[in-house]
Length: 298
Image (tube, rainbow, N blue to C red; front, side):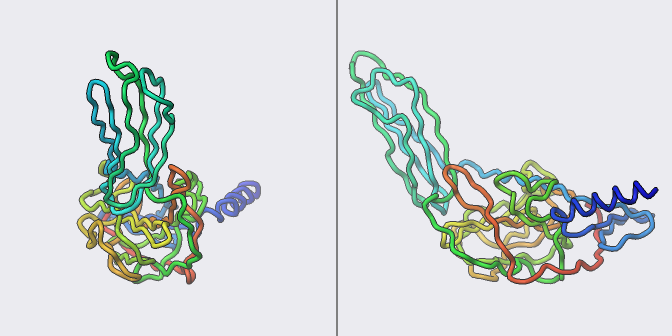
């Protein structure tokens, strides 16, 4: 028994850096599910699993205009944010002049750009090539500025259910420094920093098809992006392209996507070179005690 107790204590200490507190789940005889920071008879320790795999619909396009002896490649950005694009060519044949095999450019919001134009070296023969096209939100040359984030919700107080480098889902580059805050569904979510709304999803219920559920992505003036995930269906009150100020209403918290309990997943990201990565941030006040709250199921 002593060995088991020591093992459990060690496990709790080892996980303390990834889970800020223990939350318990209890289902009563009527099937009502409750979550609390206080254990109750029959309650089980609850773990949030919210793999953040935000899927942005394709709004950056490669347009190819091809004739018999000529090909033009243009990138088109429909997003309300700059994007970095890469066009990579391989196995170029019958192309006039030396051509770069890799092209990288940054497209401003809502713009298009000619990337490459090929002409046949031998007009009687067809052009031949293969290509790959990639893009990532944001400008990698943007320089993040120091900023302490006000709490992006109203009400509470609440606490973290999973912190940075959490062993359940905060271990990949996109979400390593994310924070999950357990809160009842319907909690008002507000902008923790001013910026332009880049992308929203508002119509998903339950797990749906997008692991991130409903979300709002806001690009700040320094090129970083704040992302608010797992929001309640039909609760998003901002639109893409809209500029929001600090404290502006965005949506209400929910339990959508790959989320096993009601909470807000908040992460700050930037483009580090054709890839979005989360970056460390701090709230400007402690995230403190979680009161008991009851919910009508998951």
